[in-house]
Image (cartoon, rainbow, N blue to C red; front, side, top):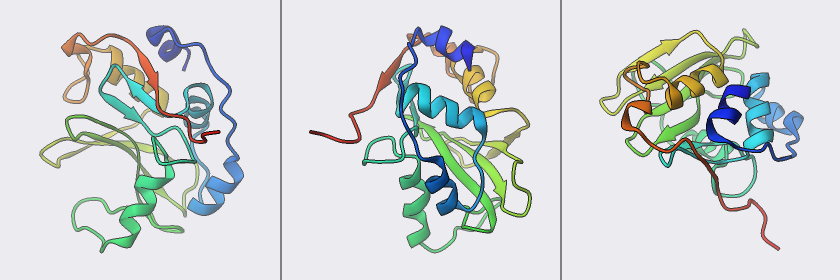
Length: 168
């Protein structure tokens, strides 16, 4: 977590989230480091290319919207299914402008287990046994983190917050 703050030069902000409401809707607890990322950054874009769904309100960078929208569609077939409450499947927490998705594989019967999944443009899935913040840091800063790392593109190490969830 600290490495992401240092990498981007971002000063943590105080984004208040009622995690009990979010976790009640999903019917699973979320990773502690993800919750800390949300509270420190909110939703926005890392390095002008990685959209981080760090909000739980509004229509921009809202963590719950990508999860809720597919529930209206028939389940896709393939190696992994979209998560449904009390079930097993993936929940997306970030994506890139190139169509890459960063998710967790979660199982309501095994709360607290968060395998990171990444799916590239061709639809192939890769599994990573690491925390959300470690995975995100490697995507952003590790030039050898292939095929999902973006550091090889020489993008500025920035974080740009999205529009505020509430407007006055």
